[in-house]
Length: 300
Image 1 (cartoon, rainbow, N blue to C red):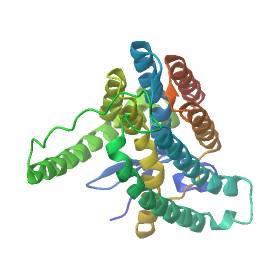
Image 2 (image 1 turned 90 degrees about the vertical axis):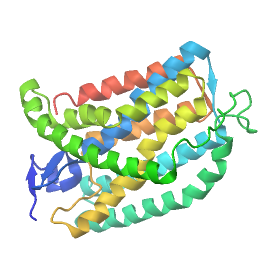
Image 3 (image 1 turned 90 degrees about the horizontal axis):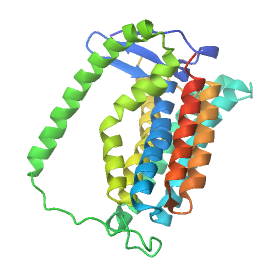
Image 4 (image 1 turned 120 degrees about the vertical axis):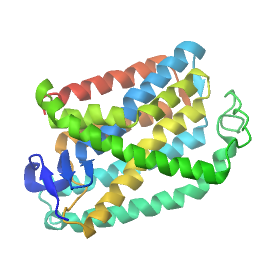
């Protein structure tokens, strides 16, 4: 069934460069650079910053496993490079510019492979999360695992039902978003970067802050940072490859300001978490940077 693209195309006509709504008779999907990058920025700056502030004010300096933090920084750096290089090729008019779609497809495959390769190591380290490891001395012990309260079939069934309900709620949310944007005179970039990004991750954001408040720094860091990692390493590449079979072409080319914002964000976050410690001042710094970036996109 044909799709109708609502929203002005970005500079250069690259379909994935800006927020847009793909409308079908039975499905409404909000896709675009501002949403992808916005979800990453919201978690890495606003939510991680809030967790550091809450945990720091309540428990002082919090510590988490350095090995996990370093691995996370490496994956974030890779994801950032992968998201930035196609955009650089496009805007610098390099010889790769006419082939930016092929470049995006190659990058998408590489990101998915790296994510798959990272899973075994992440699963092996999982029991040590929350402290107790050689590189997390002084960290609180991990909370004890409770026995399963639901049988597997019930858990899977409820997860499937929740997915369907989430799709319906997303449909209503997108339909209500357009008139709200016009009424409040918000730019589409700001709506995707801030409103949609925060609303879409609301539940896990609250959980991450609660874990920090309980002094489970490792778990808080994992919950908050894994989401942007999955967006960059799985969701964005998967949508790019999926677009090969649809009428809409998606690439990994983003608006220049989005590229700059994500590069600055990852650099700051890497500097803060690389030492395996956090405090409330570092959290306030992250929140301040988020406010600055959000203000930049207020006008579009």
